Length: 172
Length: 344
Image (cartoon, rainbow over all chains, first blue to last red; front, top):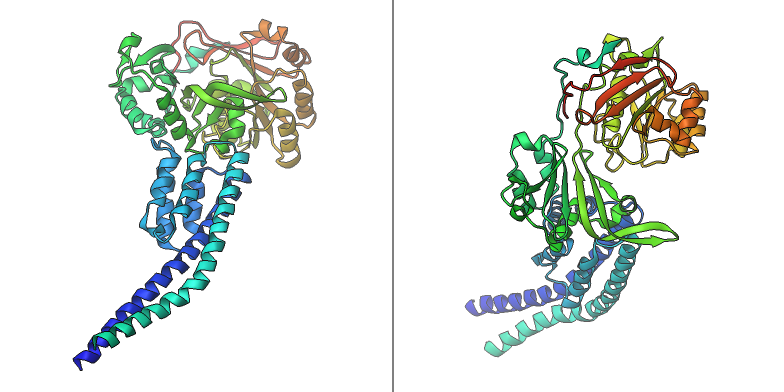
């Protein structure tokens, strides 16, 4: 009986680990998709409505589905408003450091970080151009991430179960 | 003829802009320095000036003073707080909320308007395109001009601007920084709200605010009180704005600032022909100087103006010199030079 429980626990733990690992691939795709939508929103707000960053960040906060992302943009909106002694770059950097974006790869973060260096500081044509470049690069990363996701999600899930089963066979 | 001082005993004025509202636009370190300025002093500060590698300056009672790091006003620049290039960058970032792109158009004019109607002037490196300023970058100087409403200052003049149930076509003349726009705003507010004591019903006033100075609009919303029945066309040139108002808003009075260009004559003529009254301002020391400006001369000689209000800064900004019944008409209200004007 005890062996049965142990076997279930081992298989359950490794399967869960496999699912968690697989989840990181899908999570990265989800976050990249979310960033692409946010950037489209920013581009429209900057290029066509000349809205200020505090209002744009507030609107992003109101639009996004996930409360954690909404909180980040609300905080950024308050931080960037009148009287802020901090640069937009600094505030953007802080936003990107949140654990919310842990599933993003370093290359994704670098692309977004680079945008932060220019955000708000140049004329609207340049802002739109910079956001377009950022979107294109993120889209490339998303394409790769999706391909990787298709390949590895199944493997991770099965391998989690398989490793657990193998361990059980070896142990008992 | 009554004298101005007889009519303005203890004129109620209200300072609407508090120092805290002004300070919130600055980064924390400058907020701390400026919050050291005492309440008696800040009520009379009209400008805060920042320049790279120069001391922090304020204009207090029309006098230039330096500000020390603890907020004291000092005469000697050695004791003042000196500014570095990073400070200016930080202040620009704080005043623009990190959104330079959103202020591109305003920046080409050399200033931005903030909530509350405060205005910030910029100088720096000008980038031109086809002979026109495209943007100002590497900003080196900033002038924060504090907007204050002086409620009640128009009341003594109003009886002279209202006759036989209509608002008379009025022009306010003065040199720069003598309170023309402030008086214009107050007249607009009063006639828009209506003044029961004088039998003035609330009028629909259309304001063409070319430089966002009259209503101090921020993102299209007037930040200064211009009355209940006032419609503001912000950042719109007079020529187009006046016709737009006439076509779409059916105003009783049209108000606009700083006329005097050659083509302004046609614009004013069209307002009059449309059966609408107007109130305008113009730069000139006095009537003689106004007549030397071809654009103004044409307007004044044609008898388009029924009331002329002349201001100076003889006893402080907004000193009323006279109210005249047009160019050739008699002087209706005169002020002696010794009376202290209520300050805003």
